[in-house]
Image (cartoon, rainbow, N blue to C red):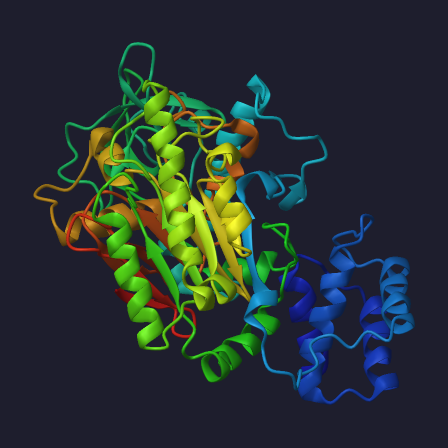
Length: 533
């Protein structure tokens, strides 16, 4: 039987989907002996080795002695001792990154390797027919691999009676010739050419009969979302549905424990151990650090700039200067896409006025990062998701006057130490409700908000809709993914404000800034929570 040290080494490499042969295990034990690592250091050192091993292009699933030796030699030559406790105070500015949608690398799901593979081809805004299919297939595969890891689907390695109660997913191709049998399918809800509702997976589709379905599980079931559908296959080739549910959500820690070595954001991957070391230090050293989130900042409304001025005055008077202020569109109360030249000029002048206002507060200008995220009515280079930043011609004065201003895409992400905050400005609630196929009866108020949040996170995607309903740039559809689950999601929407935590992910809507006397949200990174400003 393996001793505790061997079990730790095996566990760490298994987390990264690698297996260790006896020779590789012996080499790793020798490394520990040579450096005299204490038992409580082993996991940290193995995390570092496994992460570096996984970055190698020729890294095989069964750990190669040659590659492992090369990784070890490189680290030893560099005198690399990562993860040592730093005695310096944390510098929030050096760990605050705004990640644009077009800067995120594309990682495809590889069924052959059972993990993610980085796309080798250059990404384009035009995309292709193949990339459109691949973006939907990636959504299905990402959800499916996490579903199959769920305790209700994955068998235990130990014999138990629970194995008899495990649920088995089937494919649509397994239905043929098996009428009167019951099946559980995972697929996308869509309408076929005849307008009939069906469920599609990678192998085909089957028409659904919902007449015997009393109520689906909690959530919003839209055309384009992936659902677990259970029913009886009939002689006429339809599935009589008796139960329908959202796929179970996989929490961030579980996903990161498996894919923590993958740099989904393109800003450098941190390990779970690094995240665990940062979290208490953020609580201890940065308890008063805050992020402000505002939505529907209508610069053409007469009360908007006075409202912002009131907020900034309060910040200065109470020494409560935020590290980050995110201003989400729409930055105009009405569309000017068909407007005249005077409308466009006013649009630019409004941004100039905002620049002058912020610049009049030197302490805020020097210390605070400002991020501007365009809304559906704002003028950008493209109208499809993800949207490009505000056109530079409109915001040139802001760029010149504010040293820490960022003009971001929609959606965009904030990487702050090990935290990932997704910011999305879209009227998500209205769009989802317009395209809902089924929902529990009498869903309103708090239930409706919970259904929206759970559906978005269960689907691991910001817009779980078909491409004809919500067109996206297929090569950049991965920027709309929510896998691994972020730390927080800002669903900036004209819908009323709310906040809730689901599967460990904090989700909130700041609400429209002008609608109810300058409402906005304050996010506390030290507590991963938000409150009304």
